[in-house]
Length: 263
Length: 249
Image (tube, rainbow over all chains, first blue to last red; front, top):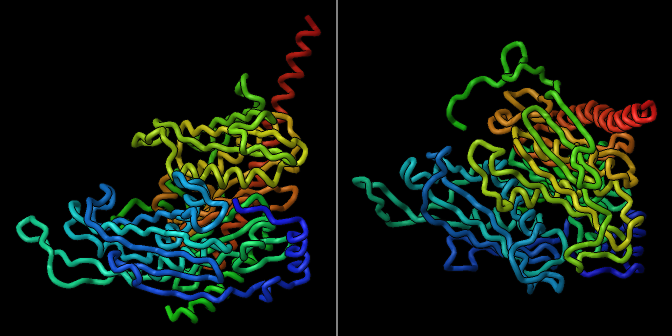
């Protein structure tokens, strides 16, 4: 939910898009400029702040040790949580996470998990007993549209920035060794969100556009250029042809972003 | 997943449960099963057993959700604790919150919310037994329950998944295939309007595999669509027969 747009503004946005233009001067398939800052939270094992236009998302990574899940005794654990902090938008409220933030966290989680970005087997310290648990906390600081792409970018940047302590098992006991290791990453998903307004597809919807958008399609694209996670959102629909067009567009945009990111 | 598991598809292309790659699980659809609900449906999709009740249009609770110009659709997807091998806590999980949202968003394009301002419709989905593909079966049943409640709809919404198992694109994954398979693509579809209202995916697919999976899922949807319409007709055939008996008496 976000604050309502006036009818005049809604029409202005839709009419421009219908004519192939956007109010901020972008083409329909342009991303806004992004900026990444890494390691700004010293107490976190990893952190990154991403600006996508005026959208601002901070991700902190905490690494702890814990027990593995019984069905994957040799694998570490990763969880993603997202908070739409009330200072980020006049429409955000305090309280437990609502469905929007749960969906955001689960989309970011799915992109990382399904691309197998983290080599979870290397997060194992003592099989069946001790593994690293990686907490990825997405903190939305300013909402100006397309939180999903900003959050996914910030999450990957924070993971790439993160260091985890070095443990060894001696006589069944966990010993902390000197030095740190990076989090073992073996893939680097890039997430692209495409909005549908009328019968036009737009990349990286801004705040005003999100409020007139019929539907959105978010796709995570892995190093190999294949889609590894999808989420359709909002109450509109896509035609089968639009889905194919959107998936091609997403792969193109992901390749473009990947070049800029040097991932 | 590194452990070896039984082959999910044999050399002849037959899956563990005996189906071919593009074959649906057996389905049973029934309409008007809950006397207290305004609309209801029950679906058995393979071993999935799902009950859906629809209430409304009625007053919205909590009141602040009420919209002066349209009806609001609320949806709750919920799994019974005994529906899965390990008891599931009855408290709503994050997965259930997400599924409630995507199910609602897959149904909304079929409705005319502007026809019922200041009201709400509640869709309650109870998964009594789960065996993979519950979100799809829930959507199929929820659309039937909405139709059964008598509100106007643009089309029925029908959902089915396709995915990848052992390098083969297959239709309608069940639990084991979903867990051990390479990818799962649930699709909800309004066949008459050619509109896709839900699309999710986890697991990587090449562009060709992805297109194949989506079109296979849509074909599955069309088959279920015919069964949905049959289920609706059956309810009224029953009523017709009952009234006939009464008049004959």
